[in-house]
Length: 269
Image: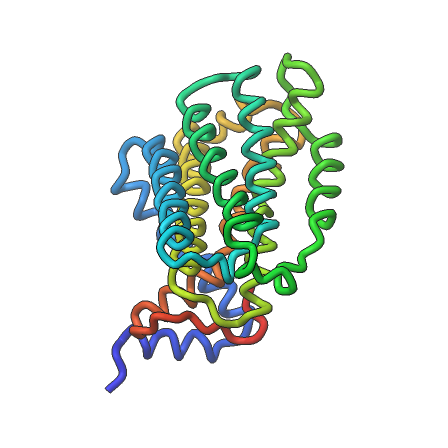
């Protein structure tokens, strides 16, 4: 006998792409409405995003230390993460310096450790041929966008461009990891947990911005600056969420189906 969750997932899988996209939007809006009533201080969503991200990194560290393998992990995604964290850390020191500076410093440290493990200690297990995403596909567009569209604050122009660059790069830093999973089709548990944690963290972060805008009736966009920059900040958050949404759907389906290893259909991610 099919469980309700299995029946729903089967029905969704049979729907055309337009219906799936519509259902995804409706589900996202429903989740936002629910969070708005459950979480009274919406700043807590940003803290939740940081916490879930930390859990994901902890899972990654456990995989590397316990299983002594980095198979299925993208070195390029970790390098992109280190780049945007380093740039954001610099911007935090010269532009705002708050609790997020400390969190970014800790995250950067662990990310550099992961890179070291993949490059040197566990190099024999690194799937280099699968990690074939060209980094200039994301780095060049992010630089161009940052030069054209960046914060309109009173800070030095280089600092403002740097801040724009790290916002755009963060939105697409997971793409090489998704390419690795697309190439392998089979995702082992710890990697799946890590990427799912990233997806949840991105959703909480996106929900934080959207709900803050709703609470301030759009005044937050004015606080962020003028021109296209406020819109690009929100778009970047939404892009990060939707990039991982498809994977998260199959992850949840796999977990409820009792599968330890996630098998992705063709065309996913």
